[in-house]
Length: 88
Image (cartoon, rainbow, N blue to C red; front, side):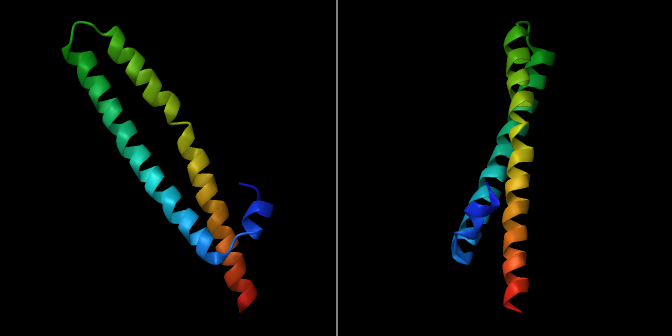
C-alpha cells in the first residue's frame, strides 16, 4: 500500500483494513502451519514421498506472503499513529 493511498482513507476505513489484514494473516499462518505439519507427517510415514515434498515446497513458498502482510499492517499502524499525533 502506498502512503498516498492511506492518506485518502478515513480512520474508520484504516481500522477496518487493519483488522481485515490481521484476520487474513492469522488464517494464513494457521493454514500454512497445518500444511507443513501434514507434509512432514506424510513424508515420514508414507511411501510415496513426492507428493509431500511438493506440498511442503508450496507451504514454504507461500510463507513469502507473510512479510508483505506484516509490512502493510505496520504502514497502517504508522498512519493511524500519525493521525492521532496530528490531532493532539
